[in-house]
Image (cartoon, rainbow over all chains, first blue to last red; front, side, top):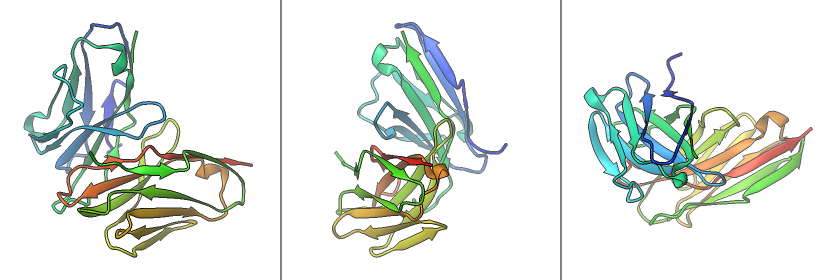
Length: 115
Length: 112
């Protein structure tokens, strides 16, 4: 399978714990996006990388959230001191585009439940 | 703050019915409009990307139109089938062309 993969698919944690999600994009894709989706809402932008550079972060991304993409390959999204409001589906997507309209290829998401 | 809206929020139709949904987006600084289909327990999949005013795209029984001057796009499904049941998302790109702003989606249920 050469699609976008995310790990873990499901994570249940207690409030205050740290969690980390991993995304492996399609290998030739230079762009990688993280989105958060809650019930009844569309995907909400969190952050975006072009190669290894983090080019944009949502104002909604508090300082408890950090994302990396070392060497422009896989990416990790870490949430520190989780809160119940962090419970959501975290979606990763990648694309290859020099001009900006490249379609997004999504992973199946990592569902976080904070108790 | 960019606002992308979709209507209706949800829709139930009988197999064989034709249906359509609306996506509205800012008409200024427009770059591209994408449609995605998201089936339960799967990942969202791209249906169409449209960039020019008046664009029409078609894939089988599904088609889409684009009006960038007034800021809306329609998605049409002809002769709905149960396998069309999914959430349909539209996503707007402004002319920086990097970020995608998604609407809340339209949840379609096609009853056999």
